[in-house]
Amino acid sequence: MPDTSLQPLSHTFAALPRSPSTHPMEPSELNLLRMALNQMDYGLVVVDSESAVVQFANALGHAALLECPDGAGTLGRGSGLRLLHGRVMAQRPSDNATLRRTLDRARAGLRGFLCLGEGTQSSAVAVLPLIGQRSAVDASASGTLGSAVPPSYALLVFAKQQLCDDSTMALFARERGLTNAEGQVLAQVCRGLRPAQIARNHGVRISTVRTQLRSIRMKTCCETVRELVQKLSVLPPMARQLSGQAHG
Image (tube, rainbow, N blue to C red; front, side, top):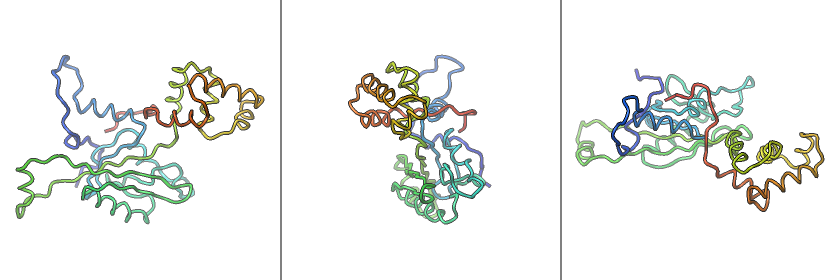
């Protein structure tokens, strides 16, 4: 029976250059890597591409697999995947065949893209093969009759739930010298709201919102709102803070 807990997969990642330890409580390279992945605004899950057993998940990947459908049985804002007895399964049974084909492609070293659900409840997951360099001895042994087949792993990368996380946007606004009111306007622009909608939400004139947008564009060196949104869309993907982030 495989271990169904979310365990780190140290041999999945290439060895990092080792530096001499300077303190007895210094974290290991694997722990540093786990902490770093927990700061990314993407859910990341490593699975065995044959059995779909989870080997590693960062905090957002763990949360994505534990999200459940709502009371109506729809996917809501979930990932379209779930965790069952330590294995990744599709929320909708009809998507399991697609998941299986995509993992089989990963075993062959091919990238894949999962489009799960349908309509407004659809979600996207990238599936990337994790194939490390094997030694000549390992390569020759794998072709020997009766030799063990080396394991194959795939990285699942879940889509972001929004253009820019509130905490990332707040840091960007502070660094660019935006006022609190301008920061709120910026957040609503990134959610797709028009100036008239923002004015109604804030109980101000639309001319006030347009003045704030002009100030935001000046402070962020953007000529148009489109350029501003584009700049925000490529900010470093910092994860929102989650309770119990130390999954892995």
